[in-house]
Length: 231
Image 1 (cartoon, rainbow, N blue to C red):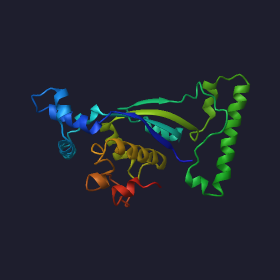
Image 2: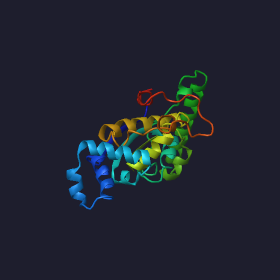
Image 3: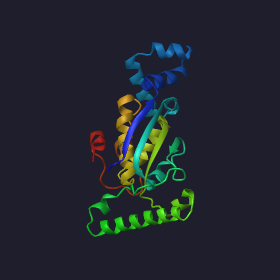
Image 4: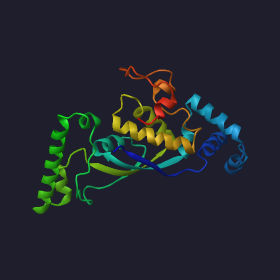
């Protein structure tokens, strides 16, 4: 099963709020006045100006909260490296792994020689986990034998500026496949609520005129539609 991401909550009228915050820097008016007076066309113009100029601090006023389900611990370890964010993750210390719920990479799932070996390794790990619990080992210590493939669940909060950074790294084709799919779903959801903020979201091959990596993948995205298309 692929990862599942849903948008739990978000800053209302995020595009408008960010544009008003930017306008406040150069206006004698009050913050509340600027938000109420801002017109749709002006919002689009201001957001494009901010994006082109790299003046992204106003983007920090808009936040998005995602529920992320069915990803592996290997993937979550990458996700929580994005430090300008907040995470709440299901605990293996308090939630017992009653059954073997794991993520199987496609390279294993489609390999008839590797798949049985993988499944046997998972079965052995979970059997050891159950045996340790039966012998009185607490779950917080028994979990040491569980694999990176174990499914986990998280709530993730990021502001729009950090999301742009996250998307620039994790939507690159060189990113690991699982976190790339999480990022793709997150971008689809965020663009529905704030199309102006995320108009420039994506890897360098789409947003910077070329790949910034020292070793490009050699297969750049052809368009935003190509990036957002479900694999």
